[in-house]
Length: 504
Image (cartoon, rainbow, N blue to C red):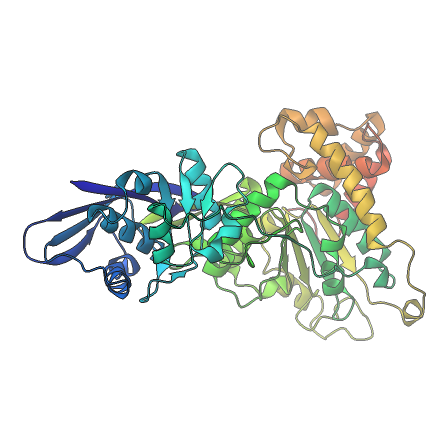
């Protein structure tokens, strides 16, 4: 008789159901695992053997065959230990077959039978709901998995507890969802002296999820401004929080099973590799752009990133997802993020300051900013020059326009957009609007349209640039509480579009 257990294999944030089949048959003693296992899965037989031995359960002197079905799906990770052990125990009639086949199990076994936490409990819980089964995972993962309301999560601390539960001798209570973790206290924009235009750009970008480029000399406050963006963003909705947490679960970033309602803020260093930014490496793990899903990706010293890394951002910015293609896998991750880039105007950083500009101006700036290709620069909705702060501004008192006030205005504008795009697939904010929907919601009045056409003709806006101006103008109108997009909204959107560089 073949005993069955169930687990999952991860394909991006999707968890695909895997059937673990165990057959014990006469023949030379052995323990074989087939079905495209990686090294960690193949080594499970030694961990399972030692864990069972620690509980005085001896394996028979027969041939033990484990098949992971579907056999053509690659199996990676140590979370296959627990389902393999349960399949073996069911084949030995130590636990009931029916109880084992009614759960989806994942967990790593230590040699003494203790269950070690693994990544991916949250996506596994979603998969368990889809196949109408309970989920069994290590105790340390229970609070994370229990965020999926429709699944019953059993979280034993050891294999012995799992056996006792399945046999009805020590039934475990369902796991309870972890706490909603609070942010560490976002810094306030009122602490930034001067830079009113840059603050306005941050508010517009946050309200419509627009991509933002900040360019200024060293010490002008670019990083300081960007670090305060989380304080003006609205909290994640429950759906967004679950989706974002599933990605963080796969990356092992959830702390004690807690889910945060604060939007992610990722700031990779400019020496990060392409796999670190886009995703990849062993198991095609999510990269920074996916970890920033529904949040902010801040890339300081933007021109210093390798050209190949920067160019890979172009498609994810447009589509909101990234496909990590490898020889043995094509993994798809969502990556709908707000890109905030900061850069010096040139290598020395003082191109715009006559008293300190280097002798290579303007070639110094052209060479340095030229590292950002025209097609990539074209994808920034807002481009802001951040001038040096005057010493007189540093003596000014703390501003009255705090992050809390700006966040309230942003929240109102976002609520308008949520209602506007309800029922529109793939659209949540003004930055997502396109096609007929964009024409319907963002076409300006006669004066605004005339201005936009003159600007497009005079400065050679690309078609992408034209539509991005419309989206930004729509966001500015939302912040003003205006239903129609008017001339002043278009004018402000254009003023941010034409800063820094001419259109390509």
